Length: 263
Image (cartoon, rainbow, N blue to C red):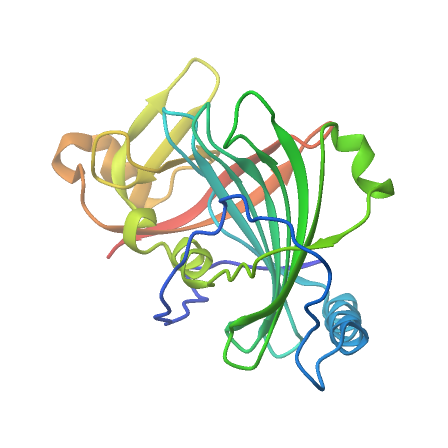
């Protein structure tokens, strides 16, 4: 599988982000997708993207960002053979009483074409629901039809039926900030963690309880050696890093530092 570092893969984009994790109201299925854009058309477009991804086999990972409060964000982008992002998967978690789950974005250039959400809805802690929600978009990136299924237990989702709900529009702005290490996901030097066995480089947002990310240091290049000499000198300084994602037993992933420079 070909992998790309986002140190070399920077995307410029400015789209308003709309958070859509609130619970929509169910309604009778009388609303239909706009004329010329039926679900079969969207399903075929989604299959075409998946087929292109299978041929390309090119994947780009964002850093895994987390906060002490329990929030986390991670994005995986799937690329065409000419390095165009076709599909993005976002995994996120909120604080203890906030939603957590996964969103798949099928893209039309940089705008959403189809979004598939699967999450644990904690908006009412007395009645936590597991939700699968699909939204279909027009060429302007505006949702034209949204449907969902909502169950008490997650394993009931495959057998549940979709119901039309109020339109839910997601924006791609946040996922591209994550990929590009911008905004609240900017990377500044935030310290080193040294243990008897392994050392880690910490980068992230220069604020209390900001998003941070840790990379295992498995070799010392000039950049790392420079930091070791005087880590306090570089605190909060902007940095660009390259990394690899490795997996061990199960789904456990960790990041390995492969290079860095001051931005």
